[in-house]
Length: 180
Image (cartoon, rainbow, N blue to C red; front, side, top):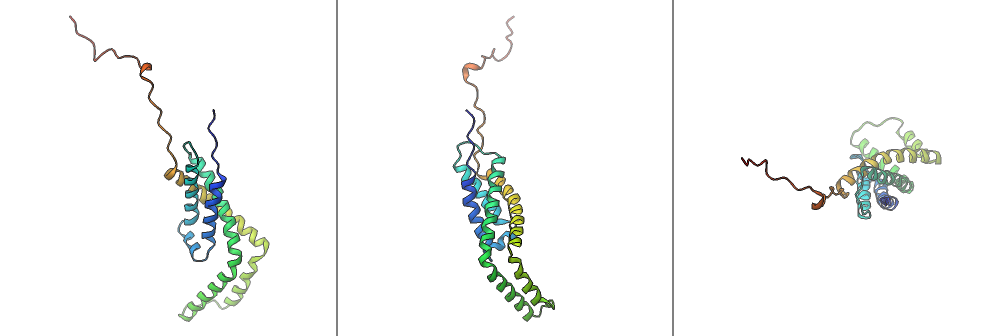
């Protein structure tokens, strides 16, 4: 009887939604600057959930599949979370730049034009391009996180059991006898 394939989608959906939510939040999402922390962690958690719901041992390929799916779900969740938070992020960026100017930092002369022009990146075309690029990056990083998760949390394959005692031929003894 062939081994049953594990169910990849449910762990990827759960872990990807959480990783995408954390990635899309303004301050918390900054942790993705540290080796895509939320995506790698989410993919590793997805591998742990997959291992908990699978009877057999998981392979690195299983981890890569669940991790890649987690990355895709996280990219969609991240993009959807960032839509309503875009004005907040732009306001935060403007306040940070204003504070830097007060402290004596030199700002570009056309800073207001740059800030006004960046609000044009909310068109559906730019959204889809951003989603595609985010999904590509999160998929690759998620696959790596899934492989790491399987190596940490996956069940190891059992070593082959020794053959039964009746299948082992009896030994001739400790050595040749010197009966002279």
